[in-house]
Structure formats: structure tokens, C-alpha cells
Length: 107
Image (cartoon, rainbow, N blue to C red; front, side):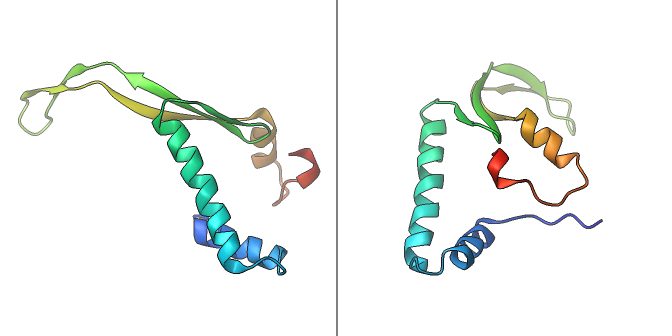
């Protein structure tokens, strides 16, 4: 089974096909606005929970001493923030089922 990456452009195309009466430019702006809003929330340290889908959390990694594997030299790695993803139970059940699509009513 070949794995395929679903990209933002495909999301926009699917929405355009589903809502033909909405202008394509408006759909693109809406999708861009949603992703920009979510990105800004994460950048300011807020967590994002989308029920039935999952949760994005911002975690702070402590500063540490690492080792360059090529030279063996010690390197200081500063503290940084990273995003952690946890999928919902509903999504976990859905991806482990044989069906290819999740019922919209359940989400």
C-alpha cells in the first residue's frame, strides 16, 4: 500500500468541489485563515484541542548538553519549544478500521 500525503491544496480542492456556490478565492482565504490562527495560537503557547480529532500541545524542552556524533564534541543545546500531537480515541478507532472514510456525524 502506497502512502500518500494529503496537502493543503487538496483540502482546498475538496472544499471547492463540495461547495461550488462559494467562490474559490473565499475558500482559499478561509483555509489560510484557519491555519494562520492555529499557528498563532501555538506560537503564543496555547494548546489546541479539536474534539474527535486530537490535541496539539506546546511543550518546553530543557536546555541540555548533546554530543556531535561525527566529532564527539560536546554541544550546548538551548531550551526550545516543540509541538506534541495526541490523536483522539475516536480517530484512533477510525484509522484502525477497514473502512476508508470516517462518518461525518461521529466527528
